[in-house]
Length: 436
Ligand code: ATP
Image 1: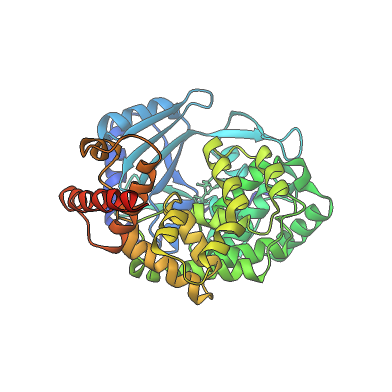
Image 2: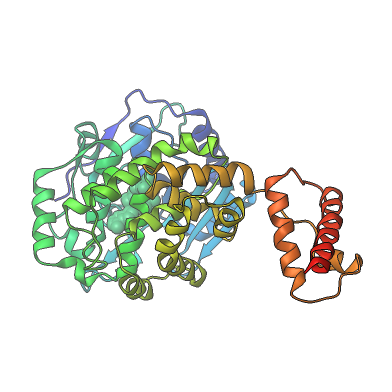
């Protein structure tokens, strides 16, 4: 049921960055009869006092032409979607603009993507997930912006309630269940009673089986990208939302605990000299920790991750136990430690660290590697050995191994220093050959 439009004029101020972008948009539409509103997540976050520069605009005019005009004025990188006359502009500095032509959506089959046609502003709002995401901001007057609220979204927002717009919402698009859970964790909101009933009913009717594993996985990824992702995981699991992408996938306290660790470990990462790396990749590794090799392989076949990523994940699974055994060996030499970790990415090493954070030996070995060895490199090669007159053969490998050990244990950080030691190594080697 559509309530009457409510107008909120009350005292909210636009933050400067947003105001300046909207002022540019106003310049673009000046003297033209274009109707455009800001809509969705950025308006919701504006009322919550949170910065969100992922700006969604909706217009009754041609969204794509409008996006081209905005791009001409503001620059950035334009992406066009001809089908729905939509354009996106990435302005850098985490500022994104999306301009859509108001549209109407029909769900012909539950769980499948909707059919889309152009529609009215209200059509465009009705297709949305929750009342708090249906607010329109009219910014023609930047000092007195107005919010149009058709579904009591403002009141839900201030009462911290997540509410769907109609009873069929989760049948039309079951991925909204993941979205609802994510929003509860992000904002500390509650799912409103009827909406919760609808979620439980939809789950009981197995609506999620009609959605591809890949789409569900995308929602899971969005969840693990949240700042308090361990809370999201816990909540997803309470609703049993993992079982739909793989019936062997389960989340236990260990995994949740590791996600929690990861958030704290960001502080520790500095001490371990980790560079800026993708936590999401590490989180995916942790998420798959409980899966056996074959189970992971089956799941990966259904997901549209990059081929390379899949290969890496499978190799990691295959080598995990073996690597751990080596890392826990008493008297592990620097050389063995280096050889074990040097082909692994920082993300993988961080994964080993997090999964074994309570193990003093493994922790100290990773520390030794990342702070001492990671940047040490052999700067000489076979050609340098040849130049010193050594006949080619298996001896080259032996010499290079000795050189790597020397490099790890001593500060041989220039080619000059390494060549000096190389000469000694060759000399000693000739001497020992002679003795043999
Ligand atoms: P976030 O802050 O996580 O990006 P958002 O609300 O901005 O949250 P987007 O995924 O960027 O989410 O979507 C923009 C808007 O599109 C939402 O505010 C909502 O109105 C609408 N929307 C997104 N996904 C759905 C969906 N599955 N069903 C209905 N409406 C949706």
